[in-house]
Length: 247
Image (cartoon, rainbow, N blue to C red; front, side, top):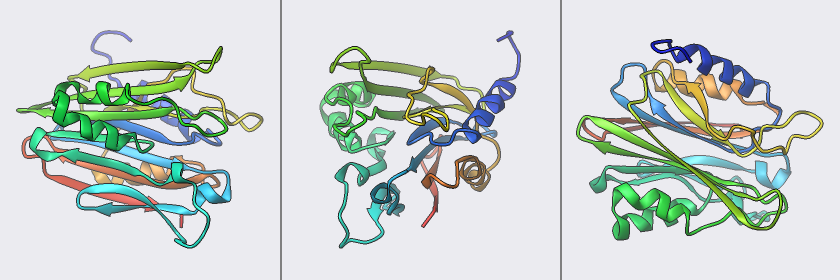
């Protein structure tokens, strides 16, 4: 990228790619809104099987969790978890695609906000499902009038049963953009292909409802299940959440 070039163009190109994916699986994104006043986190969930589609995201005490549509039906425990939470006193907010949300939160008390995300993620490995789905996540830490974003992925090695890890820290993200990681990025013939580039620049344009509507519209309507967006005011920590559910 040329210095001083706007990141919006590359971000929109990646957004177009997302809109053409038949099945991105689950996703976690973080960035800064156009005004520069809000740290933004988003999570989305997809599903191809009936059991993974019979769920929705619900807001509980400024957090987001998945719940089944039918409590009496057979449940896959890997699909039911807290997707967004945080420790307000530490100005630490986490979003993930699984129950490692709780592992990261528990680590805040022992490692502090600046080290909790990486330390908590490293206590876990990829999911024990048939496809060895990657665990992905992100955390944002409010620091005075600025924000630090951390991203991570735990994936199965293509050569063995061992875990591979990637982490990234992003500071001073330009307003109007963020970064997104997804569990899959395949095509119609082979949808369960892991992304070649695990962290991609994405747009965060407009207010919280505009962001929610844009990403909900981009997700494949045949496989999307739920989407949640959280705006965190950087100066005050005030939280606003919106959700969209297929069912």
